[in-house]
Figure (cartoon, rainbow, N blue to C red):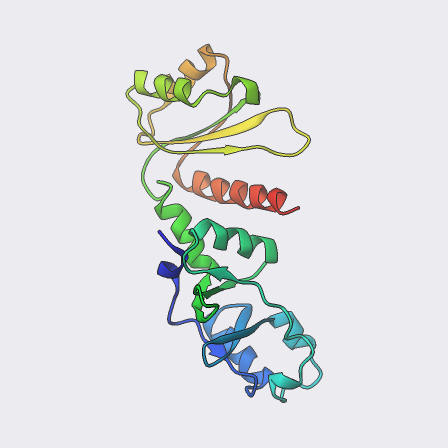
Length: 220
């Protein structure tokens, strides 16, 4: 999948001749905290709600503002993970997308990116989640898969999280069944530390929190 497939035509953009007041109104209407400035198909800037709120003359055209030099961008032929990284790195609610010729294609919302994570990681489907801890040297994907298969459990998603200054890594396994007590016991027999076991909704929220934490550390 490519980033351009997540672009929403409902996300508005402005020109330099539009006012700060109009920008704030559009942000409120669309529940976003950023909005692009575009002239034709040329992407000029991404402006922030906080800058507009602190602007003394929001009734004036954006061309007179001094905060139109912020220009985060991704390209339409990149993977959505790049847009997720940029959204978290820059703390922006929409991510502007350009084509190969640096022409503006549109924007992707943070909500669409989180929906992509959920839809493509099995988090929106019924099943239990285990969080294991292990030393990196002891991590074996094939062994984990074998343990799951021996318990007639299918792995629908697996994420590995490593954090700075920590010796242990966290392995988050999403399964196709909520009946995972025997699986938990099997991992414990193989000396894996079973850190947490989740139901559906807490698991989804926890996974997103972990993903945000991971991306935060990546971008430090």
